[in-house]
Image (cartoon, rainbow, N blue to C red; front, side, top):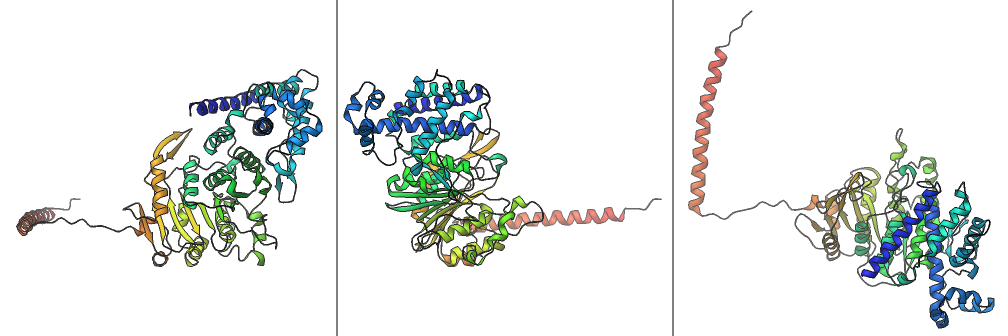
Length: 542
C-alpha cells in the first residue's frame, strides 16, 4: 500500500510538471492545454505499457540491462513476430518512436517536427483500435500535432516535455486496479472537467454517486453484458459500472456531443484496461442522431445503462426535427416546448430519460439515471407521463434522493432513478437527504458521504428494507394511489407516541387540566370586564 501511495504521489508530480511546462511556454489555462497534457500522458503510458508487454513475452528482454536497446536491435521480422504475441489492446510502438529514442535526439535541429511526426505516426498505426468515431464516420485518432499550440521556441517546448517523460516509468503499477487509476485520472483532468460556459453536463460525477449507482445495479455475478451511457462525459459512471461487473466481462458503449468528453473517455478506457471498447465510443448527438444500432438498423438495446445527463439545455434548433413518426415510440411522453424566454431552460434530461427507457434490453435491462429531485414529484406534463410509464410497465425498481450539494458545482438537488425490466417485486424509495457532511470545495459547499453512509444506502436498496424515516418499500398500486409520487417522505408512516399510565395518574392529570382551565377562564372574564370598562371611558376630543 505504501508503494502504491508513493507512486500515486510521483504520478501526480509528473502531471504537475507537464502543466508547469505548458505554463512556461504560455499555455497555462489555455484552451488547448488539456490536449497537450492528456495526449502526452497517454503517449507515455502506451510507450511504457508496450515495453512492459514485450518483456513479459520475451524473457531475454526482461533480463536485459537495457531492454529498449535490445528491442531496437531486433530485425523487422523478429520485432513483428514478437508483437503478434501481445494482446490486441496493446498499442504497437516502433523502436524509433520510443520516448528514449526521442530523448536521445532532443538536441537536433527541428526536434519539434520529429516529436510531432512520431506522435502522428503512432496514432496512425494504431487507429483501428484506438480511434474514437464521429456520427458521420470520421476517426478521431490518438494524437495530433501538439507543438502547433506553442507560438515561440517549439523545439524547446518539445524538449522540455520529453525530459519530463524520460525520467519516469509506469512499469511498476500496470498490475494496479481501478481505484488507483480512478484517482490518477481525476487528478489528471481536474482542471479540464467542465466545458466552457457550463453548456454540457459536468464530466466528473462524484464517486459516491457513481459507486451507489453501480453497486445497486449489479449485486450478483454477470458476464458478457453491454453497458451504455448516452451522455458519457469522461466516463466516470461507465468505469465504476465496468469495475463492478469486471472489465473483461462487459463491453462499453457511449455517445457524447463533446469531442473533449470523447477524448477523455478514451483515455479513461485505456487506463482501466477497457481498450476493447474504444471502437464503441462515439462523438455525436444522442437525442437527434443515436448512433448504436443492431443488424436490422434498429436502435441497439443494452443490458445496463447509466447516465448523468445534462438537466437543462437549449435544443430548440433541432427540437422540431425530433417530432417524427420514427421517434414517436422513443419519445412517447412528448418533447418539451420551446419557451419564449430562457431557451436554455429546456428540460433536455426528459429526452434522455425517454431514450434510456427505449434503449433497455426488453426482458432484463437495468438502468440508473441521475435526475433533478423535482422530477420525482412533478404533477403535470412530460415528467408525470414518464413516471406513469415506469410504474405501469413495472420497470421502476427504486429511487434514492441524495443530500443537497452532493455536486459542488450546482445547487440542484438530485435523485438517482433505478429501472429494472425484470423487477417482479416492490419498489424501494430512500430519502438519504439527511446524510453526509458539508465541506468546502473551492468557493462552493459540497456534501460528502462517508463510506458507512454509502454502504447503508447500497445495502438497504439491495435488500429492499424499510427503515423509519429513511426508506420505504411500496407496491406499484400504492405509487399509483399517491398520484405517482416517488418521494419516500410521502409514504412514511405518521406515528403517534403513546404512554401507558394508571387510572389514578389519569384522574390526577385530568384534575390538573380542569383546574388550569378554571383559572384561565376566570382570568379571561376579568380581562373582558376591564376591556369593556376601558372602551366606555373613551371620549372624542376635537
